[in-house]
Length: 157
Image (cartoon, rainbow, N blue to C red; front, side):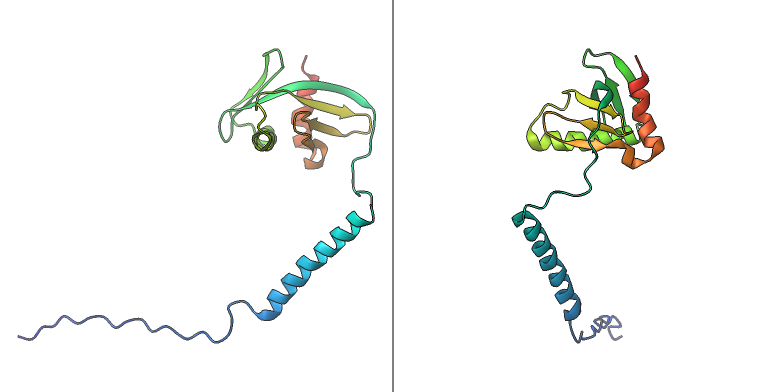
């Protein structure tokens, strides 16, 4: 009896004619990068003032807080005295802010449990400012519900 086992045929690969990414697209991406570099260089060299900066305003009220992250979703908000204002097992936007703050503090080698300043301005702005790193976030820019989660922290006494 003859050996009936045969090796399967090897897959036929089709030859690719041309590039995977068209040259015109590569050139367009290079032109975009060089244009951005040229515009940025022009702005720096001519001393152009930054645009789209928040308007300065008087501070209406502020509060120092410690945002203590526990894992990807949980966060505890404390006063600098250690009083727990709120313990959130699923912190939502508060966790997102705490995570961004923790990342910035790791970059600057700053203790993650140092207090940050929650500030409400007369023009309606609400921001968290970290004096240790210079990091800040404008909370009003993320929608009313997200802003309200931090306004409640200002209202607690």
